[in-house]
Length: 202
Image 1: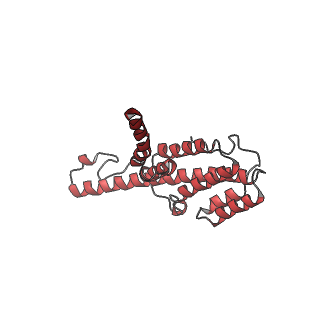
Image 2: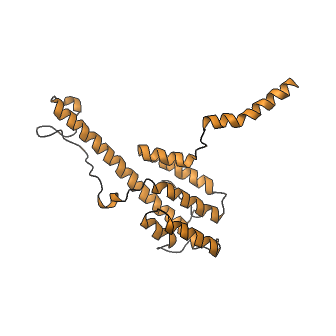
Image 3: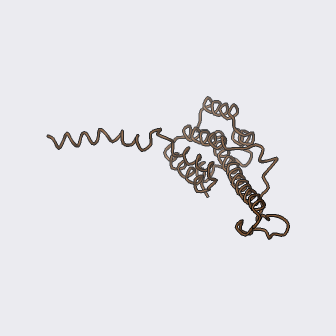
């Protein structure tokens, strides 16, 4: 009897152990997107897309539309509208100044003031490159998600009420205008996406 009681106690504590590891029960898709925003690493965005595709495999059209819109909403928090009109300047190599070669190591710059300024310019260039990478990827994936939403909304798989609900959620949401236009009305051909509307990571 003691053995059985011990086993029961172990299983009773499993939920508490799981919550201890992930106290906020954070959505792994959102976690991956947050990591992508922080580091600008494409592997984090690819992970989020892979998790999304796995999640929608057993979903009906209504649930898929909800998942796409939810994912697009997360990406919209990263979207910077100023990037289109004022993209950051990115340089392959940066020079410390007149008389120095581009791309040299900061340690090779003897003057401390020039070296400090050079290091600042290097970090600024890295930040600009990361932001450009993030904004370019976000726009690309939002376009894909918009097309996936449009395919579902133009199909006969949703009721009229459901279509109106999703169109309203898209038009009244904080999404970029380009997403709203593409998602609510498909611009290209009306053929079904070969993957059934899934957003496939690169």
